Structures are given as C-alpha cells and as structure tokens.
Length: 429
Image (tube, rainbow, N blue to C red; front, top):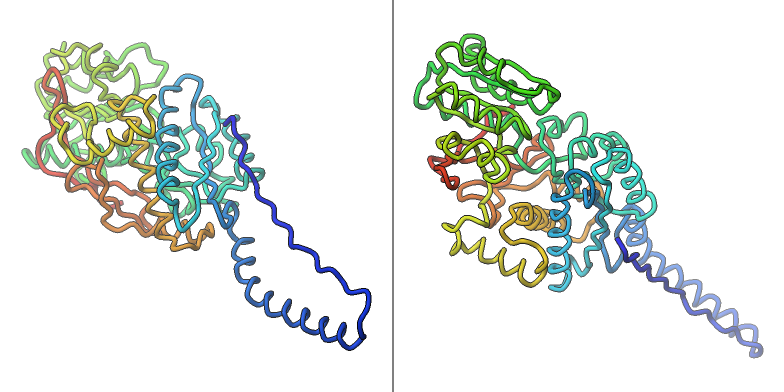
C-alpha cells in the first residue's frame, strides 16, 4: 500500500484558572467540575472499554487486513484483493457500516509463507487490524494460522482449497469460503450413484492434503462400500507423467474417473484417459476447469464431455448477460474497478466475498469486538448472494466452518461449460 492510514488525534481543551475571587467560589467550581468529571466518566467509560477491547475500530473506521500475491508465481490472483478493495470503497462512499468507513489494508507476500508471516504480524501488531479477511493461499495461510488463532483474531473467508481449513476445533478463528475438494468428490460420487448405485470408481489424487480430501469425500458418501467400489492411486507433484497411474486405474471396469489433480496434471489426465478410450464419466477438480489453461491444452475434442463442479456464476458466460446479479457486478466493475477485467472470475469472486464480509460487519450491529465479529461470521443463515448459482446459499455456525457445501455439475461441450442437473449438497462430516 502506498498510502498510510491517517490517525486522528484529539486533545481536550484546558480550563483556564481564575487568579482572583473568593475562595468559596473556587471551591464551588472545583466541586462542580469534579462532579461533572465523575458524571462524564460514567458516560464515557463503557465506550472506552469497548474501544480497548476492539482493536482496529475507532469512531470513524474499521481496519481489515489481508495478505495476497501481487507479485510472484500466482500474481494473477492478486486482482481478488483489488476487487475487494474496490467493493469496500463503494461501501464507504455509501456511508460505510454503522457510520464507520472500512480501511482495507492489503500487503503483497509474493506467495511466500515467510513473507506472509511478516506481513500478518505487521497487520496485527502495527496496523492493529480488527480481523484478517480473504488471505490467499494454503501455504501462506498455514504459516500464520496458529499465530492468529492463539491471538483470537478472526481469520475469515480465506482464498484456499482444502478441508483442513474447516477444522473449527483446532482453529476456531479461521474459516475458508469456497467448497473443498472433499465436497467436490462427494458431489461426483452422489451424481454417479444416482444413475448406478453399484458403480465402480477410479480416483487419481495428488499425494498431499488437497488430494487426500478426495479420498475423504468418497468415504463420506460410500462408507463401508468404499473398499469394494473404489480403486485409488496417488501421484507426486514431481512425477513427469500420470500415464502409469492411469493405466493401472483404468485397466478394469470403471464407471467413473475422479481426478483430484492440480496444474499441468489436469491436461495430462484428460489427454491420457481419452487416448485410452475411456468412455465412463470423468470428473475433474474445479481448480483445473479453466478452458484456456487446461481444456484447450488437453485438446478440446478430448475434453468434450468432461464434468466439473461449480457454485458461482461465470461472468464471461454469454448466457448470463441479462442475469441481474451479473449486470450489477458489471456495473460495479465499470465504476469502481474499471482497470479490472469484468470477465475474470477472480474479480467476481472478490466482489462476492467482500459482499459477504460486509454482511458480517452489518450483523455486528455496532459491536466490532473480535469476539462478536467471529460470532457473526458463525451466524450466517441461508444467505443469498447474487454471484452464487440459484439454490446455493451460505450457511455457517460455530461447529460448521463450511460456508458453501452445495454445488452444481457442469459439462464441457467442446466450447464452453454447460451447467446441468440439480444442486447437490455435500455430506455432513
């Protein structure tokens, strides 16, 4: 941030003493002032106590902190924070929240966990933010999650993927936003079983927390049937190819292939499954559903028919050009973030999450203590959002840190994703 926040300082005017007059008059005046001071203290102390228990909150502002990647390997995702900052500016120009303006302070960590730790400490200990919001990345957030939970700083609506972020017992002050791979796999399993209850599944998964979420999701749905209906093999991110893994997985009868993969492995698995003549259902992770980044490199013909899950409207989808939520989002981008790309779903994601964060602050009803901010984040009930798909709502509680557990399936038709079928809900875990 190039601008430093301004801090207002107020000084109480001094009382000029009298150099003459009678002693009784002076005594009466001292008694009056003493009584007045006592009365004022009785009026002011509660608000002072609240201010002292509400870091980052003054009579005029609420300070919110964020770390993101404005540089480094995933700098394209830095636009999320810029869209969020633009949304808060709009809120401020409309009067703010409870008469206070939102001061959104975000720092570049270059997707470097060590830098994230440094920036988070600066936000909390120097900038004295009330909370952290929308911090980007599993690695960066892992570097600070223990620190913020020990301090009791709300760590909300993180831009991460992984079911570990929903562990409210270990990290009660942390909460992700998007559904995890665990929920994605639950939806894929449920969809397949709806058509074929005895279906055989093959799961290829990355050997880390992200990939293991897919195994957990399959076990959530199948329970005791998992061992007889699923064959799963992992791979390492250093593996040059997935060919041998897929040959083993698809060597027998398989009704559905579920790919819990990231990055370049998305194109690899699509290409190899197609080359092997696999005709079953193929579900890929949302993180590798990019048409230009994954499906085109894999070959649009090979990717045709591949399925994925989604929960949000795609602002670039021509079919949504007249959707009221997308029209409002585009109007917002044109006025408040004109340098951003309105077709970029990272920007619509930032817009959506900033809207949810604002709702939490509104629910605080003027009490912006960290404890109450967290209590309100834990109290979202069937919350609609204009960027969410119809039928998908946000729900949280102190024992449910999964704001989104509903998703809809989409199928690639060779040119674009086409949503179909009902909204599926992940299994309770």
